Length: 339
Ligand SMILES: [Zn+2]
Image (cartoon, rainbow, N blue to C red; front, side):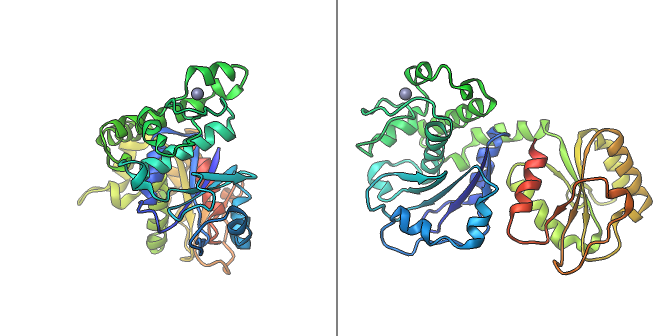
């Protein structure tokens, strides 16, 4: 499930850390930060007005997503937490500090889970009273405080949806794990983004997950670093020489020692012309990765006008062309690496 996420500057939230929190728990539910500019201009959000103002690049970006969630602290004209049509939702956390003392980041995460469970998975129906279940309607918005501290799907909702195929799915397991982390952090009055418990899970997951090797030409280093950060921000473990190799180490030796932990290899082709495949050692590693059934993805970065020169042996692989800055190709690449 690919979810585009846009959080405006009225919510003090570090988006990369927020995405990392989700990706620590989930492989199948992936968040993708919206690259196109968007902003709510009015003092009061009206769903239809705001959606009608979306730019074409933003609409295009959303086409490759299963759903999109925009969050703001500007008030809604109808005082709901969120509204959505055609899988595009606008969340409002206006007046948050009057509703709960819990951090806004916990609230955004909780409401995203609510949208996924209630509307995408359609597990359970509305509860008119505050029960603590994710399907509470919040006629009284202060109920969100209890909701976040309990953060669960009640048995009544599960039983009512016994036929729903999502109930046994990996996605539902993952979202339950996200809810457990939210609940655990809220009970301790901790922000999910700085919760040491989440960091522990993160480290364990990272230790286990295979790394993505970034094979590149040093002349393209600046862009390779940007790509490396973008991948790490969504929880992908990367292997970049300058981060892995200490002073005096020889990269071939270090890579040989860690090769069993590599699950995929990006062969990055940039503006510098000379490709990394021209280096015999790197070429040997690429063959080794291929023999080990690592996923090999050539990636084009750099100047959009310049046609990439593709060496013959790479033509058999599916390319990711990151020269266009709209973020869709990057989102696709991330999905390919997360599977
Ligand atoms: Zn329920």
